[in-house]
Image (cartoon, rainbow, N blue to C red; front, side):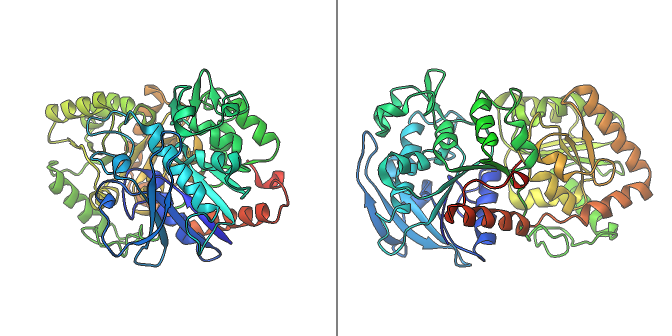
Length: 481
């Protein structure tokens, strides 16, 4: 099978969030059973490509989409990667989605329509004359127009669209259609129209042959008004047709406390001396006072979805009870400011790093006793998996992938509602566990023994690819969420 994996980020080239981690790991796991190639925009420094990158072809302008070129390269371990090169769209400072001030790029519709159109042309064999895709796997709203462009005349290649987070939809004004070269007929209730706007996310939901999302629980949740973000009707229809499948994400093999080179000390389940050395290193690295109390960690995007307000509300209780709080991440300005102020009040017990660094994040997971994840919703979540592998017990809401990967009272703690009362109750349970070293260590051993390998996910995706390519229709009900 020849699979084109379309993504707006991958950790090998740019590190933003969970999508980047998934895009780096899943294609590698799938490469054992298929020829999987990745395509993404050439952001920032990648726009000034070295001569070693192999030119593949040029995509002509369309509507207000400028011409772009596509080049080919490969990772050190042989994964083929295509880059869509258009410096005027992608060669900018800031993240792939927002500028240095955290504001969406005003031309994001042009930027990601150009990317999706280029991916569709590449998949259909019009760019790389040596390769074309048998199937396209697009991911989240920035690549959601790829299935649409294919259906609008590029090719009838089968398509899968994965929803990583339905809350980010790529909404633009109606006149976006003319700018991106979409047919007028696409602006309808069965197309990309969404309450008077154009929704890139909806394009992926409507034009793809099959939808997946990143846990079975989230696949059920998004068909309800509470989690459906206004798209629950479309999703319920796809689910009823057995065209919506939940496949849980995994984490890569580098999350191994016995071999990870970023840790202050390697350790195994039962080797709590090694874990204590990591805790001491984290306290020293970030300026926390020496303490024998529990260390709570929050490594996340600092946004409302993640329950940052609940963490702020619980910070005083954590500190007054003898605990400490270590936060790492970037996000909404009001949360960054509030966390910085909390640190000023108790710099010995609360430290905030307003950036993300993978090596430091690994040490935080390895050194902490508990990882806070009171998310209002969590499609899958990776931090709870990282935490358990490194012996940090997650405290999360019973939603999405958290409910499938945390065993309440055995490998972590689950709260039923994203409320201050429920969250504080779970923190009290954590303090009670910490006071009983036998219980704490039993839970740590159980958490570290859990497997979150990508192998099972890759097998499920491979079976889905094969079924679509065989023209066997939708997956059976038993395999769909």
